[in-house]
Figure (tube, rainbow, N blue to C red):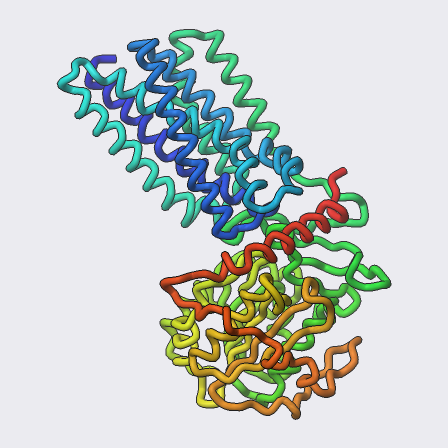
Length: 519
């Protein structure tokens, strides 16, 4: 290989390494989701530890490049080591997070990433200093070599990020992209190493093969009473459909069908009612409050889930538009939850849809919550004003929320309430039955004063809610003095809800480990 060809080859390796770094970061953060969620804290941990792994790699790579000047074999060893660890991530992450799951969200995420994501990133970080050393002939050319390597590496990272984020992960999940990214990183170094040191090349080949097999078959196996019907990875993270008994939900433990997103039950419907009705009794409070509007009313539902609310709104005779960010959720709802495939579903971000739609609605429902993650960009003064634009004169916003209203944990709900009021809405706060930790809150906000005495909805197998106003929380019992007005420029909601979010996710993880136990 002449010097010009060698330079092009090394820069190509740098390009692939830069892309592999971003693939590793995105896959690592998404692998955390079923155990620790997708909150700001998780992404902050992933970003910080990506930089930490690269920093450590740059330092070690610089030291090694001085010790082994001009060693191409060193470069191939480093690339193949990073490749093997990247391929192994889907397997190693599951083992590690089973051990860290009982830590709080921040500590659990940090410790997990330190164990399964930082090692491959450290090896990838070592690559650039070694390549710069191989390209540098004299001190005069050092700056140019370093600039070229980091520019090419960064370009690879940019392209991989777009490819992974917009196409590969949404369509192929996490396991196969991790394996393919690792194999792409390994191919050229492995071929080159074969001509230099055949025994070492065969060692890495066996190591990569074992890692590929381990990750390919590292799936969960449920006990006999649990039947997994669907499993994929994508935009929202991990999505599953599982048939299982309704432990801890109903006294008869009847079989239900669950939609789980990152191990959180999003929808739970009964087999005995052809998947038409929810097993959760609190679900009837949404349609009951909405039933003050006449048939033919226009409703916008933000967040599809398994389609339970859509079916309830259809029973009321409403015209329903749905916005769902993850296309898989719509496909799963049609295939496994008997959602009408003709349902008008728009694949879009909720706030973006609100800003761009021209249609006016009688009711806009926010139901985009995901365990510990709150849709901060919707629940701000600007978000409410955007929504007000698409409401009819006597229209109503309904927003699902977590059940805490008191003390530090309830400050998030009180801040949402205060923000609604500061945005010009009259607000009623509906609380479903149960303790704060186990109930839901439903905000009912309108510029008009609404009359909820004429509700008319009956959910089969549940008693009709005769007077839904009895479940409203009296505003006088809400301490709004220290609550915040939420704005786009000060997204405080995740921080406000952090303590409650920890408990919420840990409780779901305990449920997951208790009832979705591996064989």
